[in-house]
Amino acid sequence: MTMKVLLVIPVLDRPKEISKLLKSLNMLNLDGIDLNVSIVDDGSSTTIEHQIEIPKDKNWKLNIYKNNSPKGPGYCRNLVSNYLF
Image 1 (cartoon, rainbow, N blue to C red):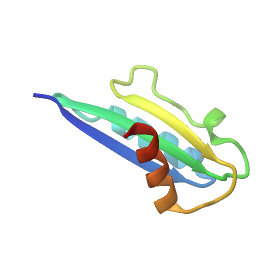
Image 2 (image 1 turned 120 degrees about the vertical axis):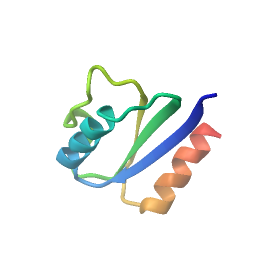
Image 3 (image 1 turned 30 degrees about the vertical axis):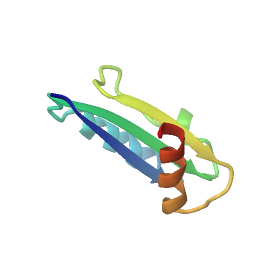
């Protein structure tokens, strides 16, 4: 049986930290886990999508969403749940 896990990460101007987080996630043993990582750029001054390093050999799904202005972590989590459910 596979467990589905959704990890929502609201972020504002932190591309280096997100890159480190993605590298750490890639080192996890995810046997039996279907991991979906959703990063929500909450109105960063520059687009982080082009600045983060995404592991090429990742075994999980990655989605990146962008808000035009900061709306807070609660809004970001709800935004992703509205897209997926």
